[in-house]
Image 1 (cartoon, rainbow, N blue to C red):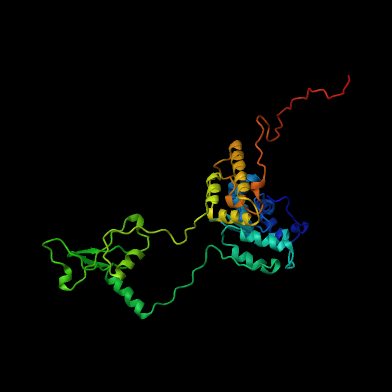
Image 2 (cartoon, rainbow, N blue to C red):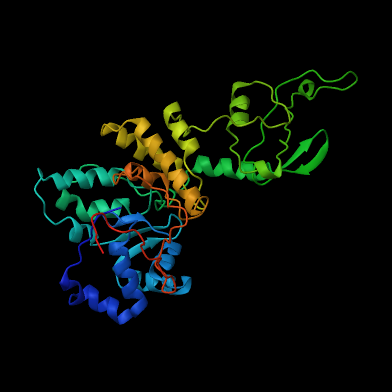
Length: 360
């Protein structure tokens, strides 16, 4: 959590402030909250569910959504509902500065913060906006890219597609059946000895094509294992091979897996890969893994004591392991019987202890 945030008095007189003011009070409240939110960072690019806005500003969910939408329409920020990440466009300039020198320590801080951000659609746009001001050297690509239009097919590819269309109806043991439209092509079986009394189709110079049985939940699985078997000439059965491990699988070290197992569960997204990147960045800064683990345990006890465990108010692990180092916070447990918030109807008990040295 940041210790302070900067809001210039010119905010109320500038073009942005006037646009937000015309959009209504909800828009102004949401805009000021996003610049001073306890979940924000100096870049203005951070994880912020709408539920946080509603809870911490006192607006109802409809008012919070309305204010956020109006702030986006005014050009103040951009919001992605899938990743629940907001980008306040000029916040980095307001909080850090503009046109910094390459040797300025703030540039290194911005680069570290930028490298630890969650994957979101605004990473490339942020780089393009601030690469000169903060001398950013690595451009991170956004998680969702616009696909380029496909190139026109060559004549050979068109012939192959037409042949596949014709092969949608195949003969299997003399019966005519329709293939599944999701199966691009049917593998050709090599000669295999059949039961006694049956004439092998290979004797007549024909190859038998059989349709793979595709379970409903496996229709969208890749067909690469069968294709490889058909190309190598090895016989294949009628059942699909189980897909192997994905190529993008990440093997995490045991010391991180231990921290991840003890980290409190939360209601909502909690990307493990982003948490690992933030955790690894802290270790590169010289933080001991035991220090992080102790912080996780203190945080878990604090959540249990306050009744927030398992809710959406549990911090994402990437934020907890982030540059703010929330794992170093004491996370002191509330005292039993203490009044957490002052109530107007609560009458405090008088102090009956006589100070030492007092004479009546």
